[in-house]
Length: 156
Image (tube, rainbow, N blue to C red; front, side):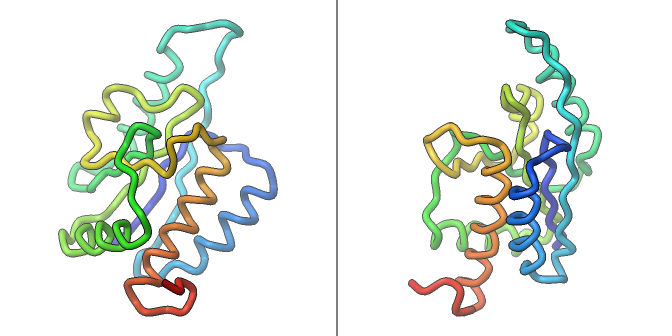
């Protein structure tokens, strides 16, 4: 199983890149984990239309493989504790398909992306900056893997 993260936002502060890099390089090599950043569509001030979100959604959908399992990160999704995430990760691994996680842009994910998703995961009920979501995602994925494998990083 290969895992990748499709995330809207191609420019992040250096602290995000540093922290995300620290955790993503700890992930198992056989996952061939990769980040695929999609440029944020420009928005006009006070523009409440869904055009930008739909354009970002089209870019996301164009990069998805038909057989991939898709997990969207969304504040309205299902919250998991660490053991629950480790269990879901085991389920996804057992399925055998490649796995793709989605992080939307400033307005979230388009309706088309939500319909394509197989699972919706919430890191928190809080609204979080996208850079912080990347870091938390990578750390939690690493923590779930460490729990699965008995690695001492997760001390339950």
